[in-house]
Image (cartoon, rainbow, N blue to C red; front, side, top):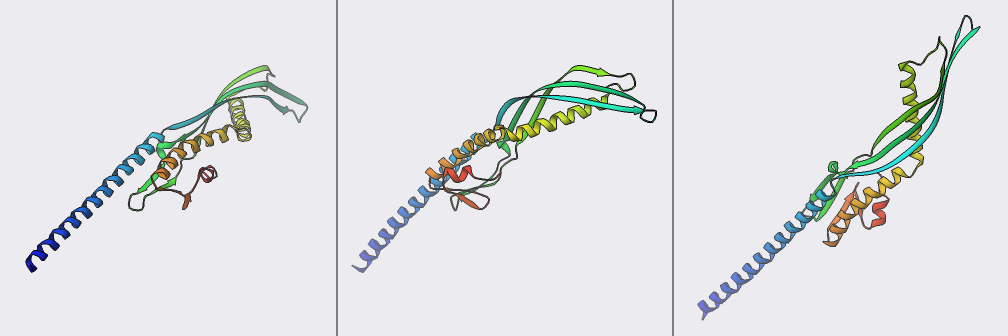
Length: 204
């Protein structure tokens, strides 16, 4: 009778051990599947997000030189019309992300900075210049530098950068929705992203 009880007890332990192993194995497999899904979603958002716009601006360039103790002066001027194609991009292939499988956390360490590209089409009108003060390469370089500075100021006041950030947030929301649906947490700059609104308020 004693041996029979020992056999039964051993069989019960074996069954529980097998069930425990199966459960742990299922959990591990599920975790691996979840990790694969998250990695795939990160790869899907790892692309170039580009927002484009067109800006126009009119500039007047004037320059004068004095000669013979300021008795004589030579002037040059031009009306400059600029049409510029501008793009604001986030290269999300540079997104620095860590996946913590053990604690079910996706940690975004850094988001790439925006890349602003300005392609100006500069045209000159009403160009006048005196013989002693003509347009040279230096003038055109100065004009191009001032034009780009003026365009950047105009871009900063426009909604182009805001629209680009909104597109960026939209891509990051895809990661948040997936992690949240699987019971994982999404973190950025030591903060847990608890909802879409908190994601929208992140500082880049």
